[in-house]
Amino acid sequence: MDTSKFDITDYLDNNEMIAAYLNEVLENGTEEELIEAIGHVAKAIGMTKIAEKSGLSRPSLYKALSEGSKPQFSTIMKVLRAVGGQVKVNPIAA
Image (cartoon, rainbow, N blue to C red; front, side):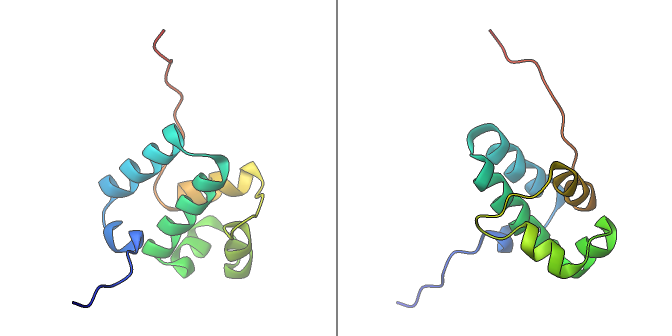
C-alpha cells in the first residue's frame, strides 16, 4: 500500500480551519511551534499573496517563518493580519 506524507497545508483550506489550527497552537504550543504554524498557513494560502498583503518581501517572509527564526512581533502581526487572523486576549478561568 502506498502512503503519502502528511502535509497540514492540505487541510488549511478555509478560514475556520486556519483559525482552529492557529488557536490550538497558541493555546498548547511553544513559540517555535507557533512560528511554524503561521508558516504552514502562509504556505497554504500562498507565500506570494501573503507577502503582498503583509508588505513583506517573499525572501523576508520565508526567512521570518523558517525553522529556528526569531521574527519580530511586528512581523508576526503583519503575517497574521495577512492570513486573516487576529490576536485576542481572553481571561484565564481560575
